[in-house]
Structure formats: structure tokens, C-alpha cells
Image 1 (cartoon, rainbow, N blue to C red):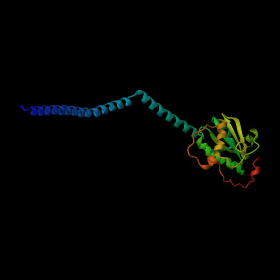
Image 2: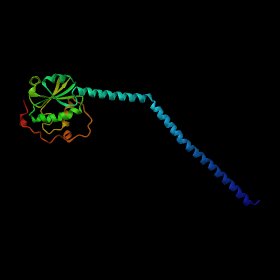
Image 3: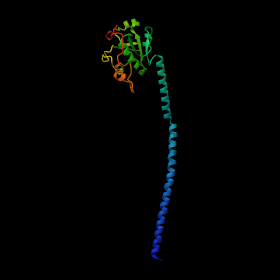
Image 4: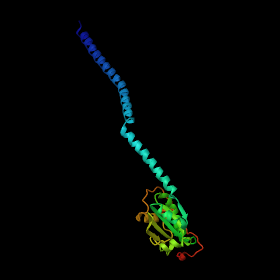
Length: 228
């Protein structure tokens, strides 16, 4: 037999074996890849089923729902007590209003004093932001008994009540910078420091809230006459 022919034949056989082995390995790899996604998907489904049936997650969800429900009920109860808005009351209503809530902000005002109108604007803005505190106003001219009893001499006068007891007061604008264009935020900070309202996370606010109004509230009365 021709040596070259034998060598060529052996070489072809060896190459054929290598290709066959490579073909088998490639086929195995394809089969493995086909099985892998199915197995992974199965595991994901099992994990999701386990999460859906997790008693701890179910308890957390139930607790969250209960907390939201309780919070909604509390908000509704406070609104029924007059919280969430800035309201005018009468002298006859006064005792019931200040003793009916734990925290109350009451503005004694005169309808013709322009500084009282400025205070009105800021308190009206704060009332819906601080639902846990009641915000009310009382015409000082129509409440002579309580004006005398509380020793009110200058208007506007904002008195802070806790459980029906007057704990602090804001007379005029002396603690707000002494100027008419103070910001609502300045008044809010004062009330927070006095503990009658709580600090709230603020979102976008208008210019009056953050910087104070530059507009003058018109009044037919001289601004220097804001006292009774």
C-alpha cells in the first residue's frame, strides 16, 4: 500500500473524529441552553408563588391598609370638629371651641384694622396645612367678656390654647419682624416653636408663603390705630 495514501486516510479519519466530537459537544450545548430558560422560568414562578403566600408580607399589607383607614377616620373626625379651615365664631361659641380640641389658634380681631386682615390671610393659608390644630377667629368688639378676661389690649392678638388653657400669645407683629410683609412661613415657624402646630414637609409653595406678600391690604383705618 502506498504510504502516502495510508497517511492521508488516517489523517481524514482523525479529522472526521474531531468534527464528530465537536458536533456532539455543540448538540449538548444547544440542549443545555434549551433547558436552562425553562428551568429559570419555573424557579421564578415558584418564587412568585412563595411571595404571594408569604404570611409576613400579607400582615404588612393588612397593617398598612388598617393604618390608612385609621388615618382617614381621624381626618374626618377632626374636620367634623371644625379643623382644616379658618372659621369665624361668636362669643357664645368660644368656650366650646377652645375646649373641644387639644390645640387651638384663636385670632381676636377688629374688622376695620388692616393688620388683622393681614393676619387673617396667613392663618387662612395655614389652617388646611395643619389639620391637627383648630384655627378660629373672634371679633373683639363682639366678645367684650373674653377680651377683658384674657387681658387683650392690642389687635391683632392671636392666642394659643392647649386643652382649653391659654398657653401663649402673639401680639401684633412684634415676633414676626414687625413689618406688614412677613411671610406665611414666618408665622408658621413661630407657631411650630410654640408647639401649637407640627413641622410639615413642604412641597412647592407660592411666593406669599415663602417670601411674604408685597401687596398692601387696603383699609379705611389708619394702620397705627390697631389697638382697642
